Length: 300
Figure (cartoon, rainbow, N blue to C red):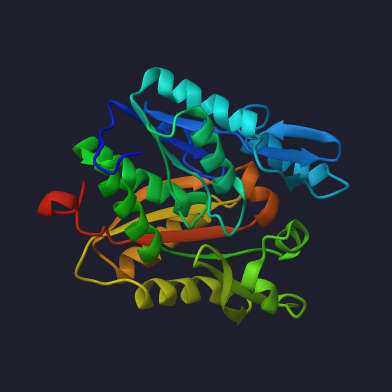
């Protein structure tokens, strides 16, 4: 796509995949979602089409073997892009991190096959509600109007600046799913030690370990304080897998250290990411908006 091509929310589809945990009721009308296959045994379910979060976690509790995920097929990617371009002049595609999945490369190939002049594929460097946060901030820019080059620069800045911290009940799902990245170093010696993990450079990486569940929230609070500023609004997203009761606690601790924090998103972690995180996980993702194009302030 030509970097000077004008984009706006009315004429531009924003295509995400189902690892982007923004619930349907929060997705703007110009969004389209590529379903990622979630596989239990010999049955594959298209996330968000054949299975939702409630059905996924119910099935997970009964499963004899842990589920897996697969990349969406080239045909599915091309179909979603073609349908997006039937209703819009352009499409911006924002898959999960290329260091966690090959979906971004498949998306680039699909864009070449469909209409490279009207399709822009960007690297998000993230996943789950952190990816949702980046997508929502990109949507805010599209609603103001921008060029393709400005959209690409905005996402690159968000990808570099955003942070995400999370904890899991167990590393079993990440280990078996092969998505553990640099966090492999904390596996195998947990016992009552709880890992505090982060998304760093587009992959799961260790941050720290605490002994006892009661020390997890203070560790997350420190992470937020150490990785954000108190003089600028902070955009925040909260995610959980079957742990909704923890969200008010997370919001309170973030507000305590960052009174200018704005909650952009609260969501349950869906089947795609839940396959690798398992139940009982929760995450806080946050970013300060980079300077907006045209010399204006932060996009609202």
